[in-house]
Image (cartoon, rainbow, N blue to C red; front, side):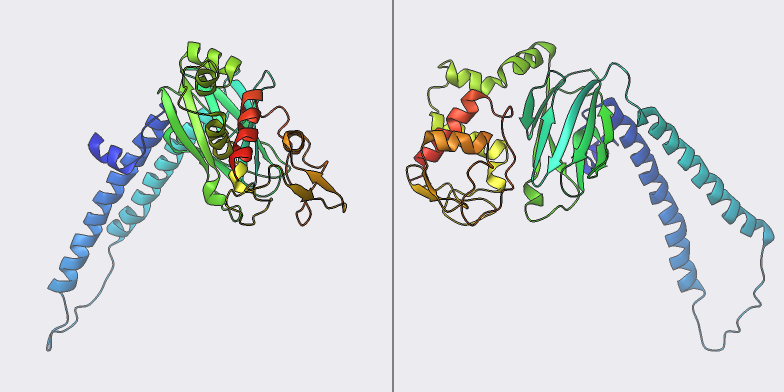
Length: 320
């Protein structure tokens, strides 16, 4: 019946997923059997002993043996299921000591990840295959929930507190993660990609920040311009959660037509939106806040690699 599990559940990306799915399918079949054991006799007895004119209602009595069986039996079954689940929970409640720790900061509406070496990413995680990974998580604003369906991990993220999840990925490739706790207007866009790499690719990614950018800036992908890569970065690191490119208003100013224009600031002055201003707005967003907007943008200092920042500047310049 593996086809049924595959139809009902997302792909398995970790050993944890196999155990979760086994428990789930066991409970599914148990509930299916119990449903028919109860539903079929109920329908039959309702029809067989339905009211008929002239039929005398028989005297009702009880059966102590049956009453004990249908009370104690389900109790034993439920307690057994509880300890079965508890055993799995205890096994995965604490990460092994050798697990690589990644710090997670959730905020409306993006994910920020920090690796042990201090490098940081947004909405993008790379982890090595067959090695345990622990995520230590907190929130800067409201309740969020870190959910990686393929790994079968899901945990609330609470402002002012730290929570943890861990797993050992065993399937190479990309796996989607998302926020599973409604957190405001752009909740549906708060997602990203967890990529499981082999050891060589993971080491390379830690050095370069991704083969796509390396390929472009080494001349291996001449079809894409810096503006094209800027658009990819705009979507990947969450710029689109606050900024638009069509002139419409959002939490932050629209990027359309901003390059080369005079921008009014909250302090009553104006500034030319040249390359220097745009880079300053990425790294020190509170330095010059646009009139009519709140100073809520976080700094991207250390989050954007130089090539990504260059791409964003080129993309903004292209939005006439």
